[in-house]
Amino acid sequence: MEKMDTIIRNRLQELADRSFRESVFLFTDFLAASDLSCFYEMKKELDYAGTEVFGGVDGAERCMVRFGSPENLGYEVDFPIELLHISPLQKKFSDTLTHRDILGSVIGLGLERSRLGDIKVKDNDAYIFVSEVVSNYIIENLSYVKHTRVKVEKCEKVPQELAPELVEEDIIVSSNRLDAIIAKVFNLSRDVSVRYISEGKVFINGREMTGNAKSLKEGDIVSVRGKGKFLFEGEGGMTRKEKLYIKIRRYV
Image 1 (cartoon, rainbow, N blue to C red):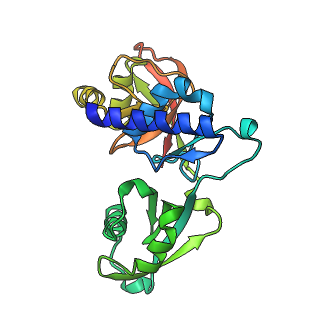
Image 2 (cartoon, rainbow, N blue to C red; image 1 turned 90 degrees about the horizontal axis):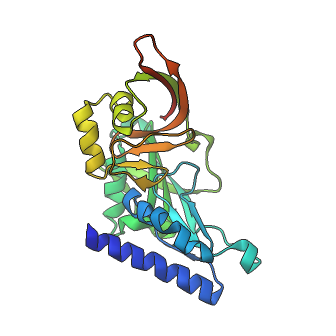
């Protein structure tokens, strides 16, 4: 893990230096949460080059980092991200297709995971954000997912159903501590929530958290790998038993 952190940190520094030196926009591949956490830890020292994070849609889990400032360079370059729609040719005869099925089939074409962003599957229709350099290759070569024959089309715009959907919830916790809140939100024991944090599976605003006593503040976005994420909207007072009301909006 330490070696991988060093590799991604060196790569981020290299791109920032080159972007600044050559006055060009440069992009990473899609970064997973742990790599994005490295970026956020370095962000202040990389800001001389200008940085922006985007994954094709607001709230994306896997994102690219762009180095280069439109204000300084005097022009704009879009993120090299395209959205593909994967759908069965005959829906009534289709297998049940999952996120794992779509990912496995696309990677099975010989592609690196870093070329692929978020995947959303609903009613056997899948949408996947990809690096534009592999977009046409996927369109031309992906014919089957499991035993289902599929077609792949490029989307000119992001469909409304891919916009983040958040559901408001009020919950009661013993205190505004990270471990207590994620235990309640995701129906975990306190011990399990502490273990998730210590294993590096919990992120706040993209930064990996390793301390379970962290207090949340309004606007924090908390992501727990394998469980989901939510927006912390703030505290709402105390119960008669001196428990704490908090408000969240859960991503669904």
